[in-house]
Image (tube, rainbow, N blue to C red; front, side, top):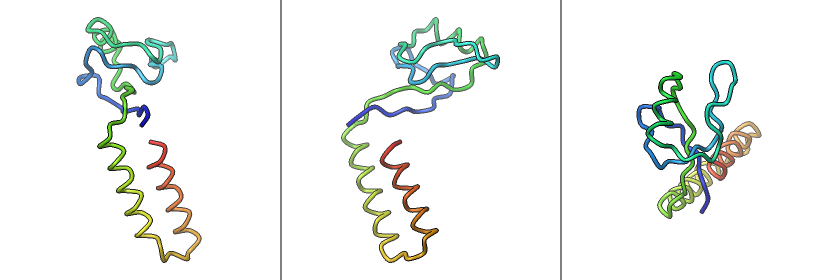
Length: 101
């Protein structure tokens, strides 16, 4: 299991969550570095800066991993008889998205 990043609306941010990617304003100035733990004060500051979403890091759970494996198996079944190179490219893209969320 690993860490996954989720885009979270500012209104749904909670203290204790970990910022997964640096948060910047429209001018590109960093408001919050990756790895920072969100506090009430930091969340309010981000909202005042009109930040709409933040990438939040969270640990994958066993359920997340099981769902990922299920989806990969389903993808394999759907494309097992695909001979078209474009369909195989599409399958490879979907696999990459599932393996590297």
